[in-house]
Length: 392
Image 1 (spheres, one colour):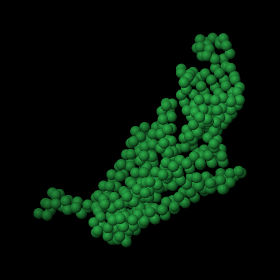
Image 2 (cartoon, helix red, strand yellow):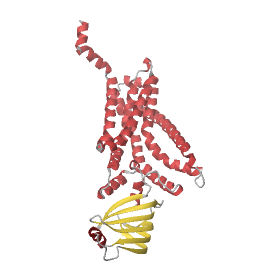
Image 3 (cartoon, rainbow, N blue to C red):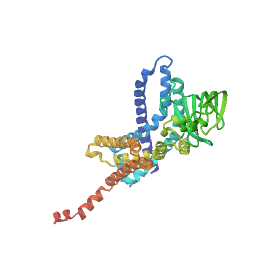
Image 4 (tube, one colour):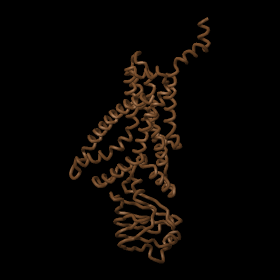
């Protein structure tokens, strides 16, 4: 069986590699054509090619499941047409036994997917964000028209930080900080031209601090004039604030949650929890990252029934096309379930697991039905009452 498994692995890997390379080239070409209008002035074609190169690991991560499905279906269909799978069946390999072999073949690809998800894609996304900041002055996501917003708790209350610009080195520029006390009253407004991170500190440069007098709120509530100056303005060259923010959290705000490593994503979820911020999107992304490697096994399970089709009955092309369409529909539904789950506020595990479990059950049922169809026909004829009456 080891020889048969190696032969199957070689055929499937070769077919999947061809399909994935073709899909990568096709989607990269479409992306280049779509972004050619950006080439002008200081942003040259070589810069666009560099950005597309940095985006290649992310694109590979997205296309790997569908590439595995199409490549496996084509490889198994070719083996079925050459009657090589019939030899395996005659030698005693059942449909479920063949499925186990296909799962073993998929395990190295699962390892590659985990490596991509945890190391290559996050690193490439960080480099891509830095390159976008350096070449275009903006990132692809995470920024509002007013800049980037962060919130954190402080011993005195809480703090809201607005950064207009993120620099490629992880520092920020044009920072505005709103300081609130425990009663959620604003007590200070801090504006700085630049800021850089130290060890649990944020070092501000060219700082203007507007300190609001404690008498202001009391005077406003009583509709009386204040007895002291309402706001005092202080100018400083530098000022150091203790903060929980880090350059990694800044980049986490920029990156898509699915593109972050699991450790960074869990750290960002804890940060959102500690500051009472919405983290539904990140929790769903964490579940989907856990489920993603098993999606490859599901794609192989969808392709497995192709190995049991009988080529002599014809219609091989239609069966292969149907298998590919079924897998593509599942992949699209799995992607759309993220938006549906966020819209209807489904539990994260439902959004991540239910589409995969449903399709896995259907594909496995189809495989078992094809594998045991002769036994099912015999049972049908033996136990179905209508069949017995007709025979009499």
